[in-house]
Length: 388
Image (cartoon, rainbow, N blue to C red):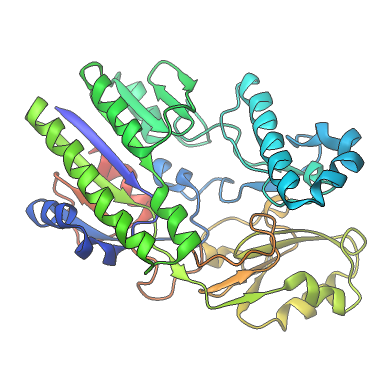
């Protein structure tokens, strides 16, 4: 029996009603509402079935292993290019690709973007995950793919720009479009028993245009047809096919912004002197150098968010570690974005995810041709449901 695992990044539970094929497939087989966990952005939670790891952020404070430490001699020159919007975009793209290639040739397959991280700050931060989740043994827990490999199951995965199987992982950036990657899996399907693809275009469109935009609605129709064609072709070719279709989260439209760093500046607290920060899209982490209590008092008064430190961080389901969390983590309330941040700069996104969920707003979907056993699951249940 062939197994197909289609991972739809950002597919909201409510979107199922808009997708004719997916709705019909869910009704004919088995489906469940997928509940997220806070700070769930990474696939490592899904594919290990565990929250007991350090891979819930992209970057952490560590200059010794930073992928950008090679920038140090060139920072003053590069800052000149960074002042021009057009040149900055090209330069930062080249920095990302060059740093990723250096990583790749060192056997590291988790690629991240420099995005909007200030050039003089980038060498301060390292990357949490050294390997992509489809690589061999990428974390302290076995992943779905580690288990498949141990069981001698032949598998093929597509997580752009990487393709992997039970023996190796390769860089293939030219197989990029979702249709091209599905075609690649179908073409190679005779050789494998388990096929996996991560489709992330929906997530990108929701960030850019919002959850109810024309662009998103048009894509949902196109994606539904694309998935129908792929699944039907596989079933016709092999007859006995186990199909799993899962998302990882929904998304919430942005209704406001929070400038945490500006609040600190207005209270005479300065970056590099009093603290080092990493502002992300929905949270800011701060490592204090001095005035720790003053910083805390300022953060506690900022509306539309909540302050976490070592005393209450367990509420989010992760163990506190200063190198990852900082002394303080300010998490925005659902629907608010941190501005500026090191991923988007001053650009307001239309929608975000990763929040501490409120009711059902961030729910995803899990569909399987195998019995699930319950109508509601959590993100970390996917591991067992895929392997059973």
